[in-house]
Length: 311
Image (tube, rainbow, N blue to C red):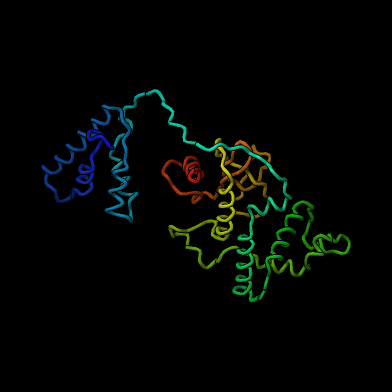
């Protein structure tokens, strides 16, 4: 329960929010000013932090369209420098982690099986459906791709990521001819899938001025599935959130350069990982829109966002 003498009461806040400063008399203004002054002085004398959850609740009830602007108007009236803080011995909260976690490997699987745990059949089905849809709608191509073809296409990209060639088409050349690829499908079929490859419907992307605009709309469904698979891993107690650079030198708006990193060019990914090295959650840095806003700054907001799925 919230103590009655702690900060502004719900009635006081309602009185302030509903007060008409333009048409009210001087006596009414003095009453409201007295309420604010009395409560703020009491808060500062006790050295307490000013809690605003009552403001949040009342503002959301009265005006759901612009809660942030009203909240800022109320908070700006408080001089943070005048607030007195008191030191107090830190008391650690009760340990909440109840599960014992031990990383046990009962069976060593094939690399493709580990990959399939995160990039599962739902990912393949999504790519197959969206690739066919884009080919038909935008290019007039009836691709009729299959799950097996999409799996082979992804396998080819991984294979060529290890055996690097100046151009993809060299894998089908007579002089080189990588049989692991040429036996899977023809060069023309590979190029058709590459031309139509899609993960979401472009026409459903909101405009930039829309509050629901998503920088990663084109790959959002795929990211959500992969994130869910990472979240489903058995959690361990000791975890941390940090950034990780995925080496990448291709064309991308979100490519970062950091000379202090081993891979200087790449995509910045914020990850939540355990002491075992396993990643349990992640989000790609895209500037504004990287994660929901909690009002604590980007670094703290990312920690809260990635920690919300902790057990």
